[in-house]
Length: 556
Image (cartoon, rainbow, N blue to C red):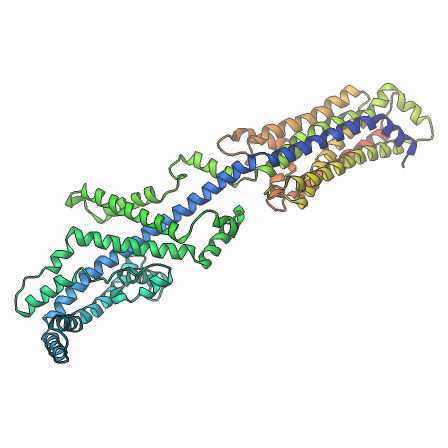
């Protein structure tokens, strides 16, 4: 079955060619892996990806800020109105007026000065019950607000509780959540009714005297109070967003969601999303949102201020203010930038460009020439007659020459495997490519050449003339390679901005496409059955070639 003499003859005849091509392939591979690894291509890709991630995170912060602010300002405005309304109700009650008088008298009798006694009696008799009633009103309103957002919410749902907590955090009645502000690393806001106090006291005096003139309600409608409410809600929103996105639990969740992009806790920290930074981002977003909303609303007539129109304006402003820079670009451009940022360019260059195309060119030329020399070349020159005139059988010829061709290609890829692993560790690039995947890629490239060598071995055994064998076997081999090169520009490994979809059809006419580098890099398993097909093509080629050679008539 195996002829040592014939094997040595093949080694002697083709050894120099094998050595030169193997050295050239390994040299090119080393250059590709080391140069692309040390070049700034990885830095450019990382910069794009980092920019996209940062912009997306900041965009989400702004979106959360605007939605939270809408809840906060609604709660602040409602509580302001509810408290004043409840205050007027409490002041009008004779029982509360009695409490006021009794408390004042008692305090003065205890030696408290008149002004202090009035203030304390005022708080106990009118402000406290009004506060309690307003808080109850706010609780009921928060649930109604939640139902308006989604009818499926219940009072115990997390969404309804979040709305209530946001409103209460912004209002902070009687300093109820002062401690929470401090725990969040911030300063508690001023007392909610501080600016209202003088108006409320004047109104209380007028109502007790039986007058109907009030000033607190007028103050609520003033620009001063409206701006105060805005600042109150903006500050509360900024504190909430800053804490909720920078506490340890939130950071860990964010890092985990970005892990597929190579983001670690250390790299996330470099983005600079500290408490103060996020607070500034949030405050700026809500401030801009409210100012622009006021401007847009000022342009509408009363008849145009419909619920749907206001909702449309708010939606447009939210997208405009909170959208990332990618959102401002045409969809095709933003998609292309996102693709580049998410791509493993190093893996693309090494796997799809070198091992699937450039690195196959010289080995394919070697296969075409050697397979021709091993069988049909010797038949064409008459050398096969001398070989078969000895005790060497045709079976031995095909088996020995097949072993040499397969063995030489396999040894070539042993060299490329060793070279690629060494270069991988020298390059030390942040890539999804690892040693395991490199071994699979080298195996895949070998099986591609094994299949091509099987086709060329078959044509070498089938024909009696070298030109016919090389025309068919070599022509098919080069067609597969060229089709793969053209198909690359239509495949999804190329960013959509430069991808030519029609060229993808070339991938369907090349057996090299069965070498699925992308699936290997993605950690999938679809590449297995495709490599099995390549193995089958090679086996069929060698077996059929050997059978044909044994049965055909040779021109000896």
